[in-house]
Length: 329
Image 1 (cartoon, rainbow, N blue to C red):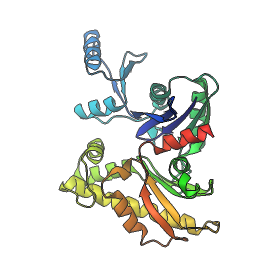
Image 2 (cartoon, helix red, strand yellow; image 1 turned 180 degrees about the horizontal axis):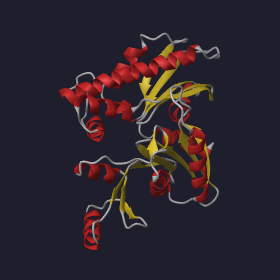
Image 3 (tube, helix red, strand yellow; image 1 turned 30 degrees about the vertical axis):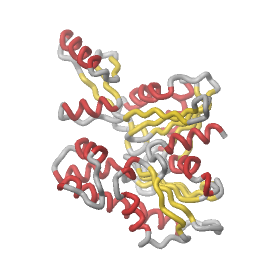
Image 4 (cartoon, rainbow, N blue to C red; image 1 turned 90 degrees about the vertical axis):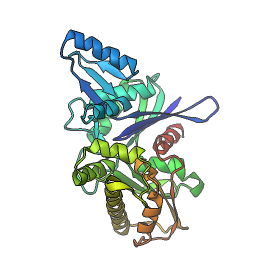
């Protein structure tokens, strides 16, 4: 058995193969909410309520309830709170003392336990060019935990994983861009070789926080509007959607400027043909994203010709799918 695991800032996705050779995906929101009972009676009533709504939760050593996943985000908004996250900008949150235990819980709900020889490939971000944080500590902590769970675990760059899912028909040659909650990751792949990998520290969270400040709303509410409001970036409706569209434009331009800058300072191979660009990640699900990205890209000076710009077949599962393919070969 082999497993692919996308450890994202906002969502974790696992991928395995069923008996017919088709991929099977599981998803879990990367969020948790701590609820502290005020009394023994209150503890029982909270438990009854959580069980009634079939929420995913545990009870810690202090008798606090820890709600994880999608339920945590929903319940936090119902209580006018912000759900907490184990991850921040693609790595374990240094400000969240519960980050590793909570991430362990979410991972366990997705992949269970291995048999000691089960291959598992998990995604990691590339080193950022506009920030400083410890990717290596994050990688080793996740690898160590997965080993405890019975997996033979190894990391793969998030954007490089997309190549295994989306660039096989292109001879594993092209540019992959992952637009996630914490970061934007890019990989330039030539005949299966990742010749350039980097990230920038702007993503969906940055949009949520920026829009929240602009319209005086909580970032978590902006996140829900962004994810479930069926926003059309080309025709936004209302002040929140208009602000979201503005910050999408800023993020796309920022990402493309850095991609072109890194390409132009890197010694690249002589590409035999035009290069496809594949965009993926939760941000690309917004209607009009590919059109906005394409329009902005056409105004940049790439050091090669672009064949096409396309969105991944499934932007939310392609990293996990690519990691699964990497774990099999």
